[in-house]
Image (cartoon, rainbow, N blue to C red):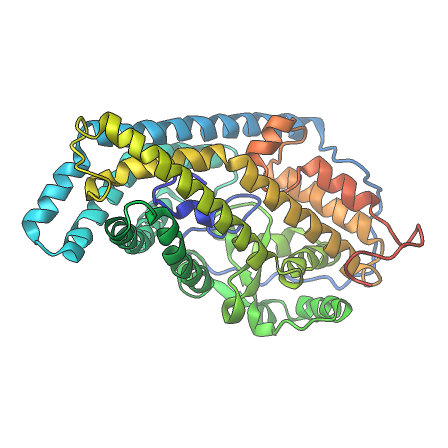
Length: 447
């Protein structure tokens, strides 16, 4: 989560569905297609050295700590910058100026929103671009980003177009319900926004993601790997159509390793980054696939969306309570007539953004739980298919952790605020030691 430009963008925090982070699905523009990487079929070859704890080499440890420290600083400073930015927008009365302009354009409410929303949202985005450039500079400095600044700018512009479209729809809904029900708008807006956000989630892998990356059917790029994956699917007792399994050309933007599940229903798909295929062994890639299949089988997407939706409801209610106090205290100074005034949008964005920021540890905690269970599923579903799946998974997390510069020793504060997955030491230790079969116990998910 880099910035919270939209009142309801916090509902997409699962997503992490649209962020180019080392532990979540990416969001950037299309680049060059991934090349086909020869795949070894040595799925039964266990790793030669035993890993029980995450222990990158000393030089890599120091580099990861330096990057992590800078990343954490960026997060809090960018959050502070975002809050100050919204307060400046309010202090300068930019929103009332745009509102007055929209009212001069037309007396029709819907046309005023079409004029006003893109103006105010784009203004906030442009004022926030220094923070975005700072973040990208950090990624480039540590070799995590390989895209050119021209490509980055294209990414940024494309993302703004998507945000403006979705944001304008949500703003229209927001002020329609505020005018109809000034006391319960927070509840009705929540109800009305859920179908919109569900539609966005559904369309994301079909419409939005292809704006940023190229997706190629796994069957075309890696037929041998697909064959091995089908064994994992058979072991899990499910069937995922090959047409829903893709390779994404992540190497056009980043050096990181990852995979993810996106969409739901007819749009649900499993995506493996080409970097993962290129840098991980087949057994390791099978574990990653098993992890992502766990999200698919264990219904993590609908569960996570439901949890986030109720957290959103709580945040909207708190925002409603605080909005009236702030309006009474500063409304005249900021030239905001009432809560139904379009000029109140930056104030509402400030409140919800602040509340969402404070709720970040809650969002991360529920995400870590689902990711931990997906790790468990990945071990269980590859048991009997790859030799020593525990060490295969441990080696993958060691390798990807070093590659992604994962923090090798985060404290509890850092874990709460920055990790939507279990920490790298936790993941390596768990997959290396989780072995119910050796104890004569039943595995939890794959019997």
